[in-house]
Length: 115
Length: 111
Image (cartoon, rainbow over all chains, first blue to last red; front, side, top):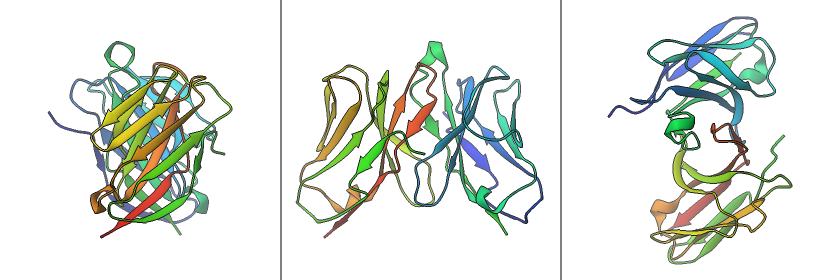
């Protein structure tokens, strides 16, 4: 069984640029959630995708957007990067309502630095 | 803004000592989870508690969920250096696993 994987591991961008982060969910999982973890903080929920549809969103501006593909992998896109977007971005997969949605399996994260 | 407050923020103890980490909220959660996170890695689930008053034990770790499902505690007996890490509590308001995390408690266990 393959766990949750994320790419890239690290990324450096400048203000105003756009970035795409990728996540492959654990085998058999149809739900993917994205979290932002700033230094010294706990993860903050960005949004969740279930079967290619957005299934809830946290308090993040529209420049944070996402996609989920038929194989349940997912992308997080951030436009017009700001310095405060510097953080560890975590992807978590779960089995959805029918598969124990509360149990989230996290990937290792992508460390984004905005200069 | 963290809806879940964890205390203390930092804990440094000697190997063999006991420690307790607290997680409090004014909100009711359908479930509460505890994670441990190592530097450069994602959080790893330790336990999920769903019933008010529930107590779960995982080897030297004991987890309690408050009767009102608003607070929880994690107790580690005879801590070992391998217990070092960032301990995070997270509350789920529904069955979809959209989690609200606390800011975490950094635990350091020295030999």
